[in-house]
Length: 433
Image 1 (cartoon, rainbow, N blue to C red):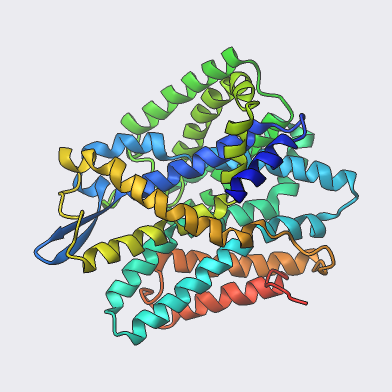
Image 2: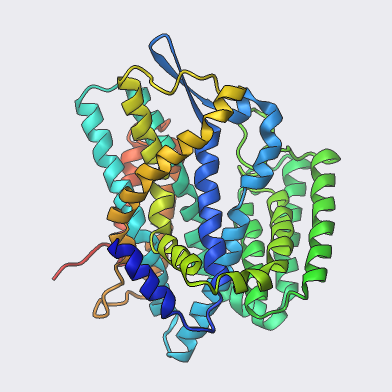
């Protein structure tokens, strides 16, 4: 395959100073998210009808599994490391904030716009075909759920240079500052019933985790022994917060009416990030030696070349497969979720989805791999920020309600307009000669 040959060539040309473990963790963390979503979202075909479900609702005893599949802290740690590298490179090349931000936003938003526009078109087609509105809303919302992450990550990227300056000046004190803000926000959320304030933890929690990436880049993380000790301490704290405190066991959104560790984010996600940071960084030395092998590194390069496309489209692929199986008589969907038979068939289900997702991702990842045109004008920083905030607001609404499911008539259309206008203001819409 030509794409594998290209990956091998890129792998062989990798500079020796590149930390391959960063790329490996990025790839593995996203693949964990993909598999986790495919497990948690359940479908049960009975008497000619499909019942969508949530594994954590039908099998509450499985909540502990989310401790393994909640890997968003890893992605923010990797993001901190990568943003530090790119900021250092921009400084060496005398590239200002606006130029740096334009390049970072392009990589994130280009594949995102494709999936949002595609689902807007799908929603129109389904509406013309007189598909029930609830079905359109459910399918589009399920497919766009992965995009919520980019809404907050883009905001963290906007703030990354400021956060990096805090790190360079104050070191770990900057990390603990964000930890304190996250903890105080949780106190206000639970003790003072200020639930609206809890939403600010989208910033404090993830900025704190992002600072750990800066620490990793500066090699201020200690040896493997110290990392494991810190991970053990963080695990004890996490255990106490959950089993002695007000936090739920599930580390992803739970369908019940109780508190959630993710909506809005709680300090438990930060502490989980510390556990993951300690364990995974303790393995960095041997893993970097393993990644010196060309084929494993080439596979990592290949996955990372389309990682955002894989992430953004994996639920759409599942929705398409589920629709196809439904119209063929519910083949493969007649096993009750959570039963032993269901678990035995999960490798087949996940394998089938992966086989379908990979060619889809390979064909659409051209938008992710296409670099920003060197002659493209760089909008002013303020203009980019305003446009990106508009984009993120529209994105958050679409991720929450999908197309056709918003409580206010026309809100989904307004959200889509916000995304497109915001992208245009930020200079992120494609330009062709």
